[in-house]
Image (tube, rainbow, N blue to C red):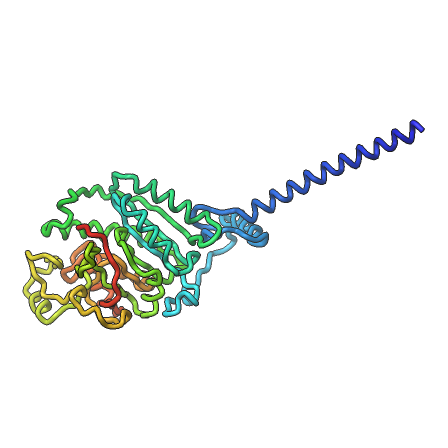
Length: 363
């Protein structure tokens, strides 16, 4: 009888032990699968900034991270299939949004609000910033917001990168639009844009959007709208935000040459930089902010100069060499110099006078 009780107790003990081991094993397996399903990388590379949601993706990521530095042969990238089309959203074409910054902390909340309101699929959007000579907490705020955008379950961005490059160029805020200082200021802005472009452009990008940090309003469908125009370079019409909703032009760097402006340039020193919106030297050009705005909003007009408040470029334009000259090119530097260079290379540059976006009332 005693022997039977002992055997029974021993059996119960084994069952309890097995049950504990089984529960522990289930817990370990559950934590393993949970970690695979919720893994998210806050930086670039690897899976391209996407959340891993399946076991197969986790296995693929593991293989990629263990073999990425042990290639047995060359890496082959076929750029022949990379296109920028009018149906970019349907064709899953990647967009790179570029924004140079300096002391921009006060503008960032609205910038990110508008950016996140865009209807273009977030997993097809990469964003890159170049912060230069800043004295505020711009970098810290960028890092905080990037963490949010890269670690949420839905509408997660493909990649967000923050670069810092100082040029030791200081200009008092009340002097940043002084006529005499514009060629030098714009030259440094061109260098900043070129640093950002060359650092951030990847082989998957079909489009490049140059976006100002201090815009206050634009349509959520703006990317799809501008892509549908299907030209090499296109800009909407940027106005100033006013309390009474009156019409005030902001981006005067979007313009057409005229017979008068071309005639005047024949006698200019080749190194002279032309600037728009200054009474010190009138260029006689036709500014897009002075064009009629009652036509269909996607009706385009050819331009010879562009700004960069919101400038959409097919990535192949930049890849083939059109950048932002920090030197004088056909009497222009920076963004207007880019437009002149793109046209000289045979690319089409256009504006949409009736497609309105709004800039903060500064400058």
